[in-house]
Image 1 (tube, rainbow, N blue to C red):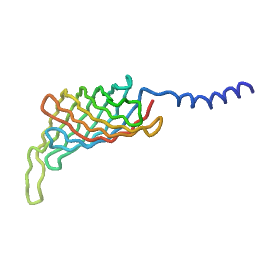
Image 2 (image 1 turned 60 degrees about the vertical axis):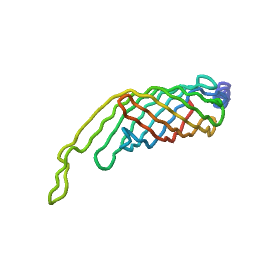
Image 3 (image 1 turned 120 degrees about the horizontal axis):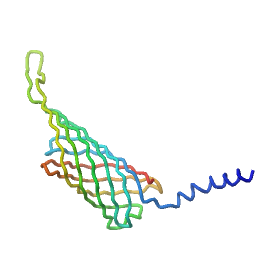
Image 4 (image 1 turned 180 degrees about the horizontal axis):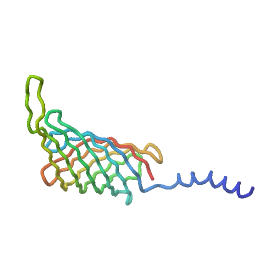
Length: 182
């Protein structure tokens, strides 16, 4: 009987104890519209990002992205991307609103499929050949982000970014994010 009462009191007290802890780690999920390549393909991008607050001004993050899109006339593109970033919050990252700017390194793998030749006849036009191109490259991230903490556990935000790559490609977009402190 005494053990049951102690367990019941502990089970009611533990959630309150965890709520008092200011978690330094959060995971964020985002979706964006981006312009990929040299500005010719619009993609939809999905992101998963893990953030770690170093102190009241600096945060580090790693993220994985996947994007897919087409230009409606010549082909489609998809890419997978990994990023590592460092952010500075000039007004501090311990408030309800966190404005941060940052940058870092990016690596992506892009697969393009484009129409190489078509032929037209009395029954319409048909694609005869496709061209497949796959490229990998390193690049840089330039990011501005605004996050709003809904409560102790959840946040929402907007991220504006551009990623110039060493081969001349660029990926730029606006992302909506949802996060959970862990």
